[in-house]
Length: 123
Image 1 (spheres, rainbow, N blue to C red):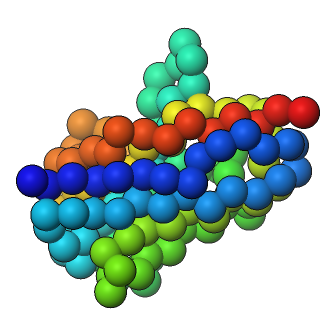
Image 2: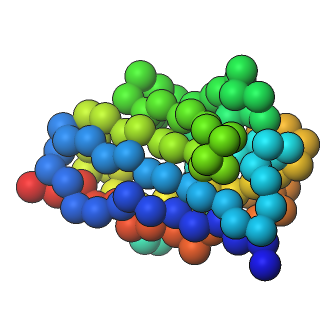
């Protein structure tokens, strides 16, 4: 069974940090670009960050540049999203997704999705 599983979400105060993980089972992530998306209540799903297969190329939404860092460990079949200086507007369900081509900002391009992990930034 091909599956992505996110973990690492939770409640954090503004200015705090979290590290999200996206682990794959049933397939290897080596050949997939991995994107992180998020969806806040009442809003559309938006792309946050993406990393290409080799990890040599990454991109970020303007709203998270300088605060979030995406990385991958193909040996562990896992992709990470380090989130620092978190703000209340970062509150959302975060999803990882796999696309066997390139980094795309369009959610519909992605082949596999995780179930999501809740991130809440609040004092």
